[in-house]
Length: 165
Image (cartoon, rainbow, N blue to C red):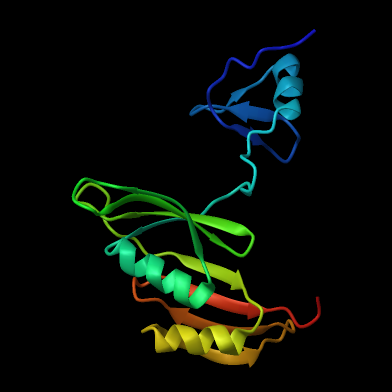
C-alpha cells in the first residue's frame, strides 16, 4: 500500500529516530515516518544544509567567490533593476545561496569553514582580491593546514587543507 505524503513541511529526524514535521514539530505517526524515510527531500546535488548569505553587493560577492574559490553560478535571478534577487553558487561539491540586501533583509555576516586544495594559494588569492587576513596559513594542532580571511562582504572563511586525510 502506497502512502501519500500530505505534509508540506521539511522532515526533521531527531536523535531518537523520531520524525517531526512543521513549524510546531508535530510527532508523525509510524505510517508517515515510514513514508518520509522512503522519500528523498534533498534535491540532487545539495546537502542537508545550505548556507545562505545576504550581502550588500551580491555581484561583488559572486566575483570574489568565482575568483578566489573557483565558484560557478548555477542559478541567478535578478530584479528589473539588475540587482540580484537570488543566486546559487557551487563551490567544490557544495552549494551556497545568496541574495542582495534590502531594507527588509539587511546584510548579515557568516562564518564558513572551506576545504581547499592549497591553503596558501587560496589565502594569497583572497588577499589579492581585497580580503583581510585573520590568520596566516599555519598547521593547526589537529594537523590541518589552515588560514582565516574576511572577504570583501565581511564574511569569515576558514581555508583548510587536510594534511592527514
